[in-house]
Image (tube, rainbow, N blue to C red; front, side, top):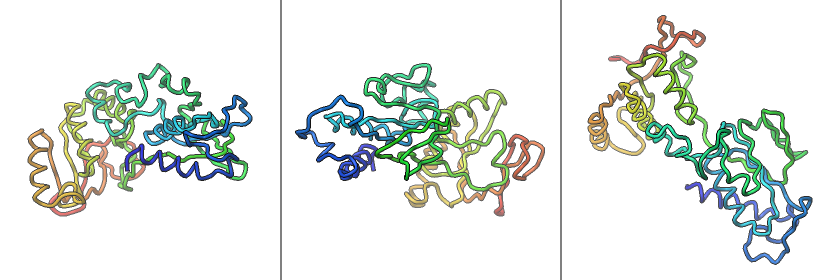
Length: 286
């Protein structure tokens, strides 16, 4: 489902909660209620998460709330406002976060004019740590607490990392945010990295593998299943896809069960912090 569709779904639910707002139809364009400038009459909507869906939700809410009956606050765990995570790989081409912005160019604080122009309180670098549904408050890691009439969860996805021994090592990354990419770029430069492995041959894994190749690093795709994108294509599709991938200089390894990340000192445990230097596999032939 597209972000805009999800936004409208949230708004439909919000509009249905007419009793808590005490008005007939908050979000219809043809409402006959008079506008008010009295802040005490307004209802506070707190959006938890300022990613793609959270941003589109706020844009649609502002557009539909023609009588300005709402005030909006949004908590953002990251150091900059909403950006297009789907196009994350393109960051390697531009190295410009503003090229991914969902509103306009970022300033030095990671903000864009859209939030001030629309009277949206943007709380950057502030992950929500608690929601008290009895007192109707949301609290961020900074300690800031905000009252709410409606709280909208738009926290998005979280990168799952299998419990593989050695995942704590320097040189092991997830691929989800601009900060993740900047950390990879810095590690490659500082450690003169020549080759890297991407565990997972699904859509995101293939995109990450291309990003690794764009860093001028030999890129290896490690997939547990016997074919790439096993939920989307069959063996014939796999063969065609691998041909295209290998033409780009990437290496494909299917049927590989990663057992551990091996440190430079040869360790394979869950505590040692020796930088990663190799992968160890549990199945025969690897």
